[in-house]
Image (cartoon, rainbow, N blue to C red):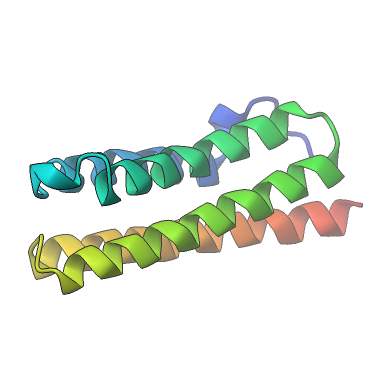
Length: 121
């Protein structure tokens, strides 16, 4: 892959934007969830771009693909946590829909990156 830095990857950029959305949304959740769901979802949100960056830094397409798979797993974890928070009524429908659209977009970008890495091997 000819990309020099993880910062050049659309998947990383979109995952960073999603992490900012998750932090913003979760800041409004009940304070007694600070060490519960808020902490978990924020860790998952940070994990997605972090694993993309770490994988890119590993130097091999196989390692990069493995870390992209981990990032995708964290994305699915985040989706589950947002769905649960929505069921608790912790944020508005537009916020939920926006977050879900962004999760879908990031997932497509990660999967596209994984396909590209598999093709290049």
